[in-house]
Amino acid sequence: MRQLFPEAAGGLSTIQGGRRAAAAALAAIDPAAYGRSRNHLDGAVTRLSPWIRHGVLSLVEVREGVFAWLERSGQPAQAAAKLINELGWRDYWQRLWRQLGAGIWLDREPLKTGHLPEDYAAELPADLVGGCTGLACMDGFVRQLGETGWLHNHARMWLASYVVHWRRVRWQAGARWFLQHLLDGDPASNNLSWQWVASSFSSKPYLFNRDNLERFSSGRYCRVCAAATNGTCPFDASYEQLQAQLLGGPSC
Amino acid sequence: MLKPVLWIHGEALGPGNPALLAHPGAQAVFVFDRELIAQSGLSLKRLGFLYECLLELPVTLRQGDVAEEVLAFARRHGADGVVTSAAVDPRFAVLRDQIATQLPVEVLEPEPFVELPEPVDLRRFSRYWRRAEPVLWARRSAGAPPARARRSDR
Image 1 (cartoon, rainbow over the protein chains, first blue to last red):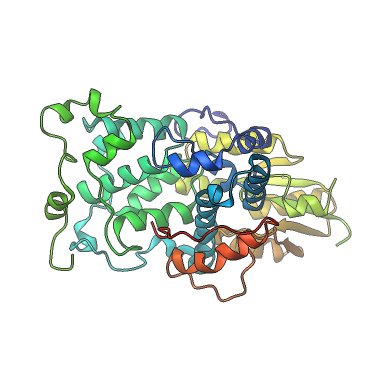
Image 2 (cartoon, rainbow over the protein chains, first blue to last red):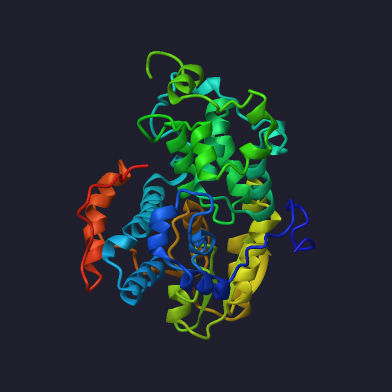
């Protein structure tokens, strides 16, 4: 691979491409556990997205796989509603991309952060991309992104929120960075989710705090983070405090 | 078309690719898009994942200018046209049109996740989902869920 693509950065992922690996992952899904635990980093997420993104698995196959699981398990249909809903998100993003074309790189709506688009930096800061912000959570996500090409959705949201709202970087810079690394990198799901975080495709910006991150990561990052114990964690605040600190202007 | 070649692209690397299903045994090609890879700065992980997917398909691999490579592949095999599957990425339409200046191109649609009559209101997910969810669950013989209130926008 290196000889074929000498200009491409990094190494290979441990996540295997191809139909065999995809079929094994599809056979292992547990839609009920997914519905209960999907927001937790250790939750029963399916990890099917790289194969779905490249059509190795179609959404139709996954939908039928979920219905077959319902038949086998005898669970009520509601047990699979959350996973079917998530497949719907994928279909929704694709439909929007078909409609918007290259427009998915532009703000869908004005930002609701109280800041102007030009208040945001055009480039990602070096300490962030290098995974040396000193924040164990963010540095951990950056490392995982670079090494495996996959991040849990909640980690993507936290990292995107940190980039846009704490570091005040334009969402397009973060979106392009994710697309370079994520095996499921798809301009539709990716860019429109960044816009959702940034508030150009939602009614308010997505913010999180330490309580939220610590809870859904079982504290694995905070336990080993100097900032978490020396009082410099930028996320250690209430949502009201964070809004006051990060968002400006009367439009919020 | 009597003797087409198949153009496989990065949105359809599975056995459900409608072009592969419609023309089993036809010569097929995938082209790593040099320009796209350079412009996007794609990491080796992404390219390696694609490569592993392609190894399990009956497809010849090329890299370079996509339209030029597909056309060269078609000429080499004496093809009278190119069959491919629909893609959402707007780059696909540009490449398809470039190929179509030299050879007929047939684009096959994959089975949709959910069939909804147009127009579909896409302003927010909740509007789309209000229409899509009952149609989806109606496909299942045992019937539909959902009754309980749920958050449908992120």
